[in-house]
Length: 174
Image (cartoon, rainbow, N blue to C red):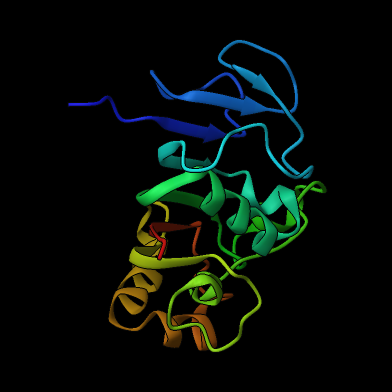
């Protein structure tokens, strides 16, 4: 059985063992130095089984172009794991290098059911969730978000802010 080929974008020094790490600054764990805002990325089509983006997407600006490039370099059925601050989190707003702020439905624009053709790349959302801190003050937001993420974002996001969003996407290729 072939080994799973993992790409970790914006890896910094905390790269997943066995992954190919990409960052714009050379350092421990960085295998490929590349500015991910420059396209195309230095990988052949259909290379990776899994792509991980942990707190990097919000720094890149053009989400649709990034998702198209991930689609290009991924194998059919590849997993794409995304962690990013939720727009209600202070972490989303205090970092001056954040170019955008994301919500629960942000990845809907790259699904096969997308209402608009903003991007050619298509994914299936296998999992998405709002993540909260562990304190008791986070409990009301967590409960509301589990019952209805849309209700949470519409009425409660800035009362009981979420910390992060997580998406597990599956690459769909014809």
